[in-house]
Length: 360
Image (cartoon, rainbow, N blue to C red; front, side, top):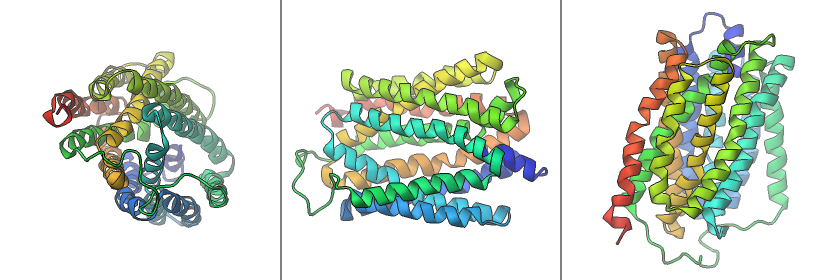
């Protein structure tokens, strides 16, 4: 969405530069997850989530007052750093209160996918109507409202001063966690690389009389909406089948869709992109449930922080990488390259169920 409009505002800017701006934002998004996990274990999920909601609303004000690309990059970095607080705190709160963790993480993911789907659609409309600042102000206002609601509503929390958790005897399994982290790193790279340039790619290869920003934003919203199906599928998959055996299969099923996205157009491209959206989002509830499976309640926030910090932080590099690939060979080449990047994640997923550490 913002990529298309920035290309119009700054005609000489390259895709590599736009990708680098996205890298700064998502790198800080990942970095923010590391302290968020420790803070969650130290002070509880509720307090960290309050900082996230209210702080992101404040960061939006910095962003929308930017006077040029350098200031815009700083604003994106600040917003990314604060938004990085969410996942470790949110996942920890759910894992401590969920009886069927994979399914309930999937339901949580449905809400996230709904937000991701509406983001490009609503953001694209607001940006087309009132400029690129409008969507940030709108969503910043929603964050402020959510923070006020959380402050006034009692919720189940986590923290050192609360009663012992039923899983208090569960111990950390570091070796298994390493392999889950490897899958997260490469899935994060691919997810960010694809979504950074999917709106631009769809706007170029899907014929329409609408403005490109509306085409790219609207079709990307449809693809992200397929994540609702993926989250529910992954949640059910993770409850019905062994999660350690499922994760490698789910990752591998992403690859054919990514490759086909490089060689299709029009309705076929949209159909293939929808297939990728379903498989990509199926990964999330299964991987998050595995972090809970392999961690003690006392250190779960920290371990979630490491997982999401690596996934989002290293994944941020994909924006620059994908932009460079797009400059050199066109946006179509980005998707095949992202498919190739998944090979190490598939390998890690295949090794995971064979570890003696989780079978003893």
